[in-house]
Each structure stands twice: as C-alpha cells, then as structure tokens.
Image: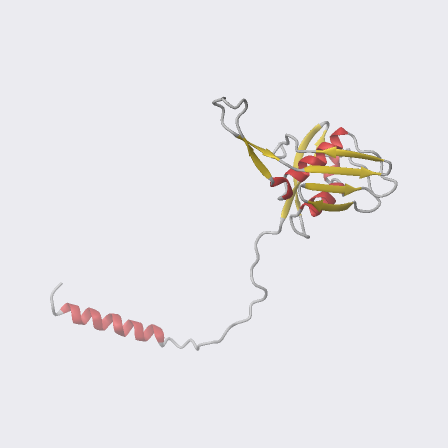
Length: 181
C-alpha cells in the first residue's frame, strides 16, 4: 500500500463511522422488558418402582431442591400418567409427612392412619434422600484392611428415622440406581 493511499483509507473509515453514527436512530433510555431471566427450575430425583426395581424420576421442585421438598414429592406418588408404568410401596397419605433434620439424621413422621412401609418403600425413601444435598454428606474411609493397596472409598453418612402410627424404622444409605433406566 502506498503512502498516498493510507490517508485516503483512513479518511474513508472515519467518514463511514460518522455516517453510521448519524443514521437517524434516536437514542433511548432503558427499555423495560419484564422480569430478569432466571435459571432452570429446581429439580429433585424421586424413586418409584417398575415391578420391584427402583427407578429415579425427575420432579420439578417449586419449593427448592431441599430434602423436605423431595420427600413430600415422593409421598405424593407417581402422576396419573406415570401410574400406568410406575408404582410405589409408600402408603397413600391424607396429609404430608412431618419432616425434621437434626445433624445427619432425617426424621420423617407419617400422619395417623398411614399404613406400614415395606422394604421397597423404605428403599424408595432412602434413595430419594441420598440424591438430595442432605444425602451428599460423605466421609472418606481408609482402605480396608489397613495394609491394603486398595484405594480409600467414599461412604454416604446419614440416618433416616421413619415413624408411622405404632411403628418406626431406622434407615441408612443404600445402593441406588442413578437414572431411570
């Protein structure tokens, strides 16, 4: 490029910038456009049954993804559409269970009139809890035996006390499937 062309090119760029700046569009202030964008709605995984097999099912959690919301959604059972394929061994409740957290213990109390919960229903509850932030409490355990070359492992540490009218069950972490398949 010759020395004579550089000033001409520079003048063209400056003139183009002025033309674009003065293209007739008036300036404006802030234009209201509704509420700010939010992220995806909170979800929890609840466990239902296909036969005697546990399957994780995602649920929207309007109250947040805490353990109490997950347990209430679990006890609400499968939706009408899901009930064609999914089942539950949890009792049908006429009111939500009472849920309390103390340290690493979750206390779930069922209302009067609730039937007993079988082993599969207990697994549904334990696996649902394990998939919440409450169930994410973990401790690292050393390899066993002490001189083993095996790697240390992570173990979930929480306890669930499930109380019904005239009965109670203590549950702990379980091996749970991670997805609906």
